[in-house]
Image 1 (cartoon, rainbow, N blue to C red):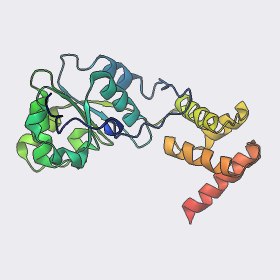
Image 2 (image 1 turned 90 degrees about the vertical axis):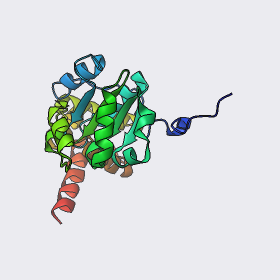
Image 3 (image 1 turned 180 degrees about the horizontal axis):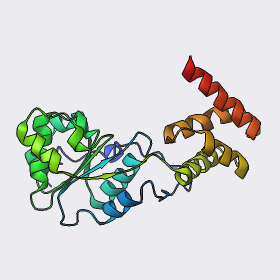
Length: 226
């Protein structure tokens, strides 16, 4: 029996990306992410072996990327981890690089080149499109500028509402529709903020009503202003 490869992660480590999912937390497709969902469902598709997925924090990039990695059997890495892997050992293997702009130039350059070999694919995930990343290597700069990129926008009302309902359901809380609508109108377009508000409301151990939601939002606003 051959020795396990140094690249074969332990089962608990196979996906290091944030994969917290609520019970029944299906990914909600809306205008804010529909194009990214469509592209990833068919990629790699022969159009190019390197694809960038970009957008603001809390928009669902990592969730989409992790689902893709699971589907195609990609090795998930974070930006700085690229330097710890021998790129030649990744030949012909799909790779997911989250926080991709944190990778050093040389590692990123080799990963992009290897993605063009048979069986290879490289999904780059970051807040900004590759054309906006810093690159000291001229050859890397030209490759980044040529990378196909698809955006995930900040959560719209449909997605934010689904996030709130899922996070409340995790805690066996079922607020009235008007409470969800109120929060959607007042919250920043961020999944992280939605989770923070649900945590605050749950910690109060009181029925979740519009007045209570207003109180929590006002407290968060005061904290931000402090």
